[in-house]
Image (cartoon, rainbow over all chains, first blue to last red; front, side, top):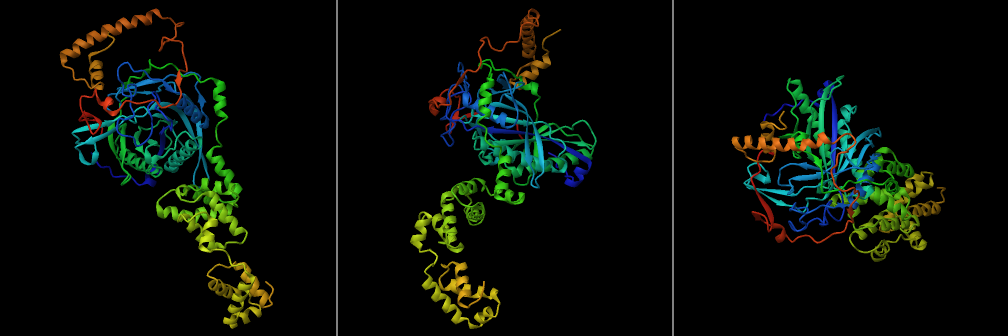
Length: 502
Length: 99
């Protein structure tokens, strides 16, 4: 393997225009496999979810999972695709032990969905339209474990072990048309596209699309052509890029690598490449087999799928609001900037905030807690916001207690701490920890009197018109009441007692 | 004109991971050529009014509900395997597919 000296990203873009193609595989969240009734449940014992069909035993016949087709059509519609009136499955023949049948049941020249697009929004708000070539149905492969080589790599392994629980789980492969015109933002567009697609898949409820679990996997195809050239360059296909950050890094690396090869007068080999998470580089894999080497032919064991138009329209009616439109609507409703919305999105806080607002809290309050205290806590614990042991309803209740003056900010924070610590509902925590704001005017009045008596010089300043100095006395009262006073009310009392207009 | 060349048979053998001797390549190329020639007769008969058929029955949309059915036990699944280890199918060294 030769190590290529990379060209700087800026220099690469000065000479060449990147053209990308993204292939995303989504594992559907169906109960059963695509062509048999075996469970798709995670974490099962090795080879405990197989049957003659997914093991490719002689005589076994596949039957299509209706939910798989339904999900495929809904994904196609959400991507503004046309839905085929009639299409077939095809056998993609290859000899590799991850498929016991020696072929993968896929779709070839008759995908169920084709010619669509997905609008993606970049961080500065610019919208970029990614054209979709096709979305087709296929099945996942089994899981290999390589024994005897270094760190589980196939290289140097003495033998391999196969678990076919995953073989046959429904996959939808979504392929873009060549993405041109993104220029130096190509890596960013790639990342934004995969992120948007993931949101869309989640909104459709067809998969949890968790990339770290392999439920969504991305191949990044990339080529460069000199500026002004019509013809695309030769592409490389970087396989299994499995996080949003990696998608961006892989595209960036390949742009720099291709430019280096081309600058040196070399030619790009059409091959698959492996992405390495540790340093963001890619290395050569196998030289790609030609499509004809797969000897695709129509699957004779399955009859064609012909989605009736009225059914397609019925499914169109089940589509959720598109994630980008929903985000823009919420952003306007909440009155926040693109940038702030981006933070909310990155923190995974959209769902919790929406639920908290639905439970009656003002959006700014809901956002304050989920993006502040709770985000910090989730980050510390390394969990998603939604996994914290507090519900949006409980956060809304805390907001209500603050609004009615029963809690101040500090007490509200302690209440939330209590809920997270498993001490009960907000009301129970307030009760148990004795967190109510001191609203007893008599007790508060005494504390104010004491603060004035203890700080005569400050009291003089205030009387002399320096109202701002009241802060020092408010602080003294808050300290005396261990923070359990309503600061605004304390201030009012101080000014009242000193005979000054607030 | 032959339907399939010796080189094409060698290529197919490689894709199918079959090791064929020279005389076998010669032998199969001849046989496959005969078969392709016989099947090609269908194309001569079929005119433009006969659409290609991939399935003999005029059916579409044969599907099943997404309901789990019992699987084989791992022991049953592995019962036909030439070798297994750790409740998994064991296969020989896989070469030349990944660096």
